[in-house]
Image (cartoon, rainbow, N blue to C red; front, side):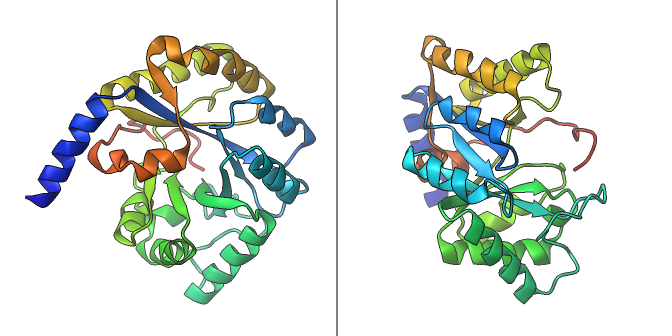
Length: 254
């Protein structure tokens, strides 16, 4: 009964405010040209890959902008491309998972949250996800499930462990041509109007950044607010509303 009341109050609260989107730029830290993303509004979060040439530099610079930094944590993929340094693997015992997470965070020192890079295998498995979420809970980090598979258990296990969490609803530039970027961006806006919020992931491709620089400035005209992930999560709205991710897995599975 209490949960029902809370959900009802959240519904009333949500209907009284503008639709909201949160946006993450994934795969930061690999290339100097990724720095073009720093021109985006500060409410756009950066998910930075660990152990890359610019991981720590980008982490520090983003934090100096008051931008939210996330660790873009490599996790085991069904596609078999698991050769990156410090990928979380299903074969790892719990203490090794924790050790790898600590090492990764040391290269992205300003992280306030985590999302998965790849992970189509690992996020389906309860044990490694439980170990991961217990660690994130201890560190006070939030989690965003990138949903690289429809069978992911990551968000559910995160919430069971008291980790503030949500999932990605739209990949904006999985197909990085102008028509698809525009289509997916407007899908993100539509979901936010339908459910009150939506979470998008994009990448630091030049064409994506140019598109976002122009179109994020028009959100107010659509009655939509760009918010920080932590504000979205702390509002509780992600526990009351559940916009769907794309219904089909996005090939290739990663």
